[in-house]
Amino acid sequence: MVKFKKAKYNYSKLGRITFIRGLWITVGAVAAVFGLRMLTRGHLADAIVRWFARSLSISEMEADLLYFKLVTVNMQFILALVIIIFVFLLFHMLLDTYKRYFDEVVTGIDKLMEERAAISLSPELESVEHKLADVKRTLAERADKAKRAEQQKNDLVVYLAHDIKTPLTSVIGYLSLLDETPDMPDEEKAKYIHTAWEKANRLRTLVNEFFEITRSHSESLPLHKAKVDLFYMIAQISDELYPQLNACGKIIENHVDEDISVYGDSDKLARVFNNILKNAISYSAENSVIKVSAIELSAWTVIRFENDGEIPEDKLNVIFDKFCRLSNARLSETGGSGLGLAIAKNIIVLHGGQIRAESSNGRTAFIIEIPSASSKISVTAS
Image (cartoon, rainbow, N blue to C red; front, side, top):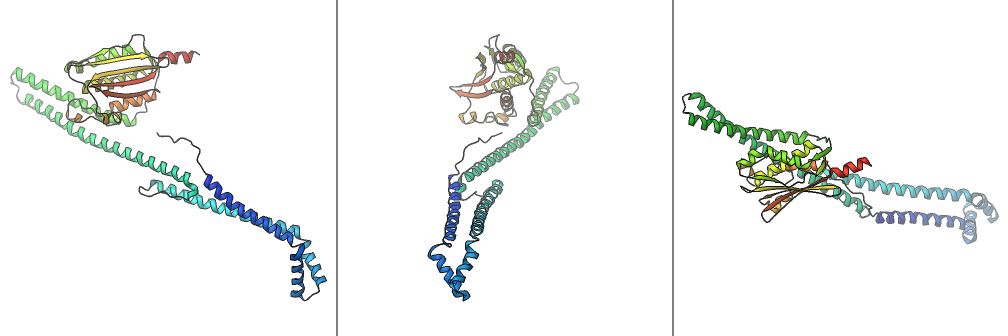
């Protein structure tokens, strides 16, 4: 899963606009207070008294007394009322502004799932707009990747279903011949039995690939870690792969020192090494040597699988993706489901390690880095 990194975003435009709006209201409040204070003194107060006298047809003394009772005596109350009004206006302005901003952000969030909708916010929300655009782009990439993986899986299922039909038809055909011709010569009978056996094995391989597809989607891969003897594990897997190696004249050379161990789930790691070696057998040159070596560092053990044969550079970036298969792999007897290396990577990552492929000058190498047993045991002991 892709995680978004926390970052400090620049909200200076938003802060500046909010500050300016608040400043204008504050200036207005100060101006109103000064204006009210002027009501109690100077020419403005005299002008108001004269206006009272003319409007109410009273003497200036009576007007001055009325002014004193209405304005001068209640000036503190009037000032407080004006300040309250301006504070209310300030909060109303801020709430209205941020409500509008929230509405813009919510609208932008709604557009995340709209394929062609552009996200556009106010200039002061530029940081939020960029973040939403990043999220939208990431969601689109994930959806596209999931769509491609689903299409690859569907294509593979169709291919495998078609391929299963071919060996199954051959097995039924040869067995029918044997059943219908009991007096068939032994030499011809042996030939048909051998051919049917080969097709049945191919059928079993294809059926296993169906199970591999299902398991790759549903398996949670719990790990049961312990110290694993790397030399012994490679030797055991090499023995198990002898029939495939012998059929194409290839051998596995185990250059791992006998004292090198790793810390992990032995069953899962055996599956990783088996998948990598089977991949090397399938795509390496005929009658070639597959070399396995390892070096133990302070905290990591680096394991290297090397074989003759080169992987195109454009495939190195996707070779660990599910259902990725090299060109024309499906047409060959060695063509797999395209899940082996993806499963291997998943297991290695679960172990806290990493795996990568290198290919140049007619050679291909898969390099695994995984925690060494010595580092884990020393940590536990301490």
